[in-house]
Structures are given as C-alpha cells and as structure tokens.
Length: 484
Image 1 (cartoon, one colour):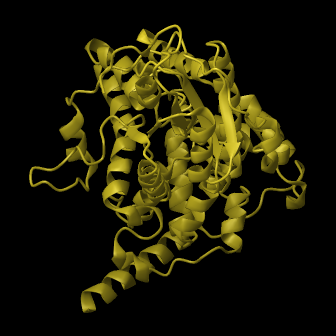
Image 2 (cartoon, helix red, strand yellow):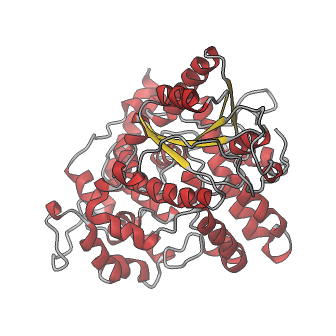
Image 3 (cartoon, helix red, strand yellow):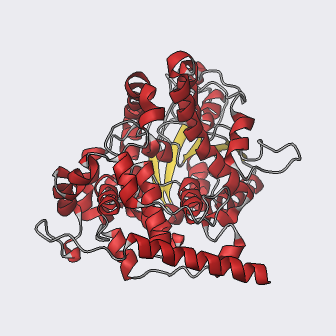
C-alpha cells in the first residue's frame, strides 16, 4: 500500500471492476483510512459496512453510546460524498457473505484490530472468505507501527516502555492518507438497517444526556480538537498534564478509541512542533501517544494481559473479587474526596483525567485490596474512550502485576496527590459540591438511592491502615515465592 491520496479515485465506477466491500470497525473516519483507500484505488464501486456483531454488542454501555454517536457523524460525512454507510446486525462472516452476494463484490478490505477476540474472529472470517474465492486484505489503520515490526536487538519484544520509545522515536511514520473527494457508487445501494433501531445507547439511560454534554463526536470535531490542542495548550503539556484542576491535555482519547483520528495523524501533526520552546512538551505528548502503541505491542505478544495477571506469581496475591468496598468505589462513596471526585467525573463524562485513573486504580487494588479485574471491568463499562490494550495495561501497571509495572510498594496517597495536583481543591469542589456534583446526581441510576443532600461517607479504611495491609500482603507473597 502506498500513501497517495484516495481522491485519485475516478468520478464514476469503472465498468469492468466489480465492487469492493470495506468493513469498518474502530476506524470511523474517511481520512487516513488505509482499507478504504485501497478499495477506492481499485476503481470499482465501493460499499462500506459497519456490523453490529455479538462482540460489539458485548462492549460497555458508555462505549456503545460513543460508537453510536460516531456512526451517525460518519454517515453524514459519507452522504456528502454521495455514499451511504450500510448497517447490518449479526455475525460478521454471514453478513459479509450476504453483502458480497448482493453487490457482486469480489474484494473485501478492513483495518486490523489487535485484541484477542477480534484477532480470532478476523482470522476465521478472512480464511473463510478467501476459501469463497474473494480477495481479502487487511491493513494497519490504528497504530504507528505494527506490533510485530518493533523488535529488540535479539529479536524479541519489548517489555519495558523506555527502550520501546527509544526504538520508535525516530522511526519513519508514513504520512496520513487524505480523505477521498469522490466515492464510486454501485448501481444500487444494499439495504441498510437503521441506527436508531439498534438503540445502542439505551443502557446509558439517565447518563446519556450527561455524556452528550461533554463528548464531541465525529471526525471533523476530532481534527478540530487536535488543532486546538497543538495551537493553544501543548506548550504547557509537560508541566501541567498531571494537574487535575487545569485543562492541559488533548482530550483525544475517545476519538482515538473509535478511530475518528488515527495515531499517525496525531503524530504527523505534532512532529513539526517538536523543536524550539515547544520541543519538550511536544515530545512528552508524543511519548504518551507511543504508550498506546506499547500497550498493543504487549497485547499482541502477551494476550494474557487482557484477562489474567501478566506476572503469574501474582496469581497468589490475596486480592478480593467484587465486594462492598468496590461497590462504594464505583459510586464515588469511598470517603476519600479525590477518589470520589474522580469516580464522579467518570460517570458524568465517560472519561477521567489520566492522573486520576492511576489514583483510583491504586486505591482500589491496594487500599481496598480488590482485584484489578474488578476495576478494569468497571472502566470497560463506563469509559467512552475504552481501549482494550490501554485499559488492561493501565490497570496491571498500577496494580503491580503487569509488564513494566509500577512497584507494588508505590501506593499513591490520595491526600498528598491532591495537595500536589489539585492544590486549591477546584477539581474536588466541582465534582463533590459544584456543578459536577449536580450533573452526577442527575445522571446516576435512581436505584442507587443517592441525593445531593446526603452527608459525605466516612473513609472505608484509613490511608495508613490500607497501606500497611497492602504492604503486609505483598511481603507475604514475596516470602511465599522465595520459599518455593
């Protein structure tokens, strides 16, 4: 595949070229979409389909809400080109086979996904369609570099981020592909299901209006957000990115998660600013983007990352499964102001400041001695920017059970973290007493039985006692390991 603009596609479909299908998934954009670009280059009609399959229906409620909003925007963008987004529900293989038969398509294209569920599904689909005689190809539309392309000097994979970053920092990233200006249409568009009939956002119930007030879905909005960040805020990124009370981050994670922007679009836009006074903050921003690649690099080589302790010796750690303390954590009722404020931010916005993510994860897995899988599952259900690799790596990094993990004895103290990153208490006041608190009570399920006038709960455990309990458990784990 080359990176020439897809706009070179002809105004009308080539009469001697059968249609091509493009199976869209987490790549809901027209620009820098390699699968779409390759289909358009063939010269024949192109039909794009998005499939609501069982794997997608199993995603968390907030992320399904975000996907629905993005699909609506993508459909509008395609209509401006004279195209249609075809929606179908069902298992991917029979849906694609049916569409190929309906349209006469002989080629099917898609951009790769890298989590285990998707990889197994896609491999089976590709094999079956090729046996049908179809030309099936997949592309990298999600990452800066394929997970198998970055190797250590001995040919292995990287398990620590810093050397991984050094390996890719100056590596060539291909220029993004421009959006198409024309779309060769078939003689007749296949029948499409209606997005509204799927009710993908239904499970959010009272929370949906809150998410809508904070999200900015769509490819155009994502590009605007990137431009705003690089123009107005990136110079303060290195110094302020951990401040909970400041708007210093890019807020692009949800756009990346559904593919309204690609990683290489962000990288390419940021790279020219990596000089002069902005060199340090821009490089730090690019390092954070590369952390996402690192997460997928690890997930590809260690599928266990998603489902079990990456360090198997942690299988013996006495973490608890779901429990009353964990439920209080999910509802922002731990009694620790910073933790509760962050959990309210998550419920209302579908996102959470990255520093806060580390703090709530540390508090759950260490102070409350609850398994990281409990927290990972809650994030999976409530994040609009949920990402399978980043979510799993983030939780295992904080818990101490993952690759390149934070040492277990690094137990974040919410009080000292608040003094450092929310020194005037603005973040806590907003979510515990201000407009954020009002939005939280408007958005939560009535079954929670909470009201704005409720007194703040007492801490579930003192910070000192929680820390000592966690360190004792860790010492016992090490002792047991050393004795074997």
